[in-house]
Amino acid sequence: MPPPQVVEEYYPGLGRRIRAARVDAGVTQEELGHALDKGRQGIWQIENAHVRVYVHQLVIIARALGVPVTALLGGKW
Image 1 (cartoon, rainbow, N blue to C red):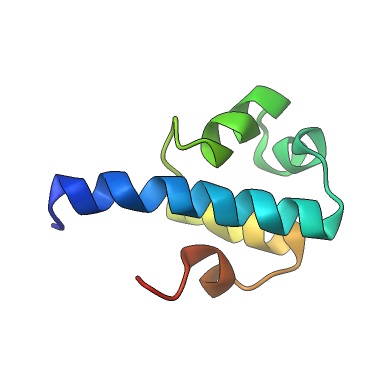
Image 2 (cartoon, rainbow, N blue to C red):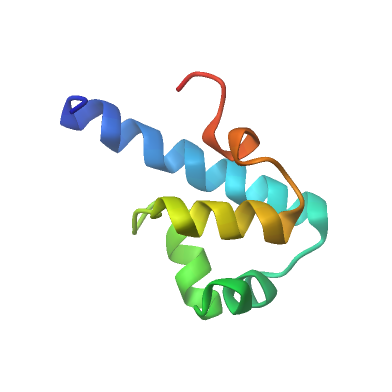
């Protein structure tokens, strides 16, 4: 497993990439939440790194936003 510091540094960037892709796609937090069976607050929590995203959720997010999963993961990882 990566050190806790690496994990804690990763999720804020992931949230920012998800938010940027969502905004670029013209999708609201509520619309994205519908795809994940979450409310707007649930998407806010993901975008602000208050909760971690499961792999299957990341795939659903990428599909809903029309981007490859790798675009959300970021090149550094």
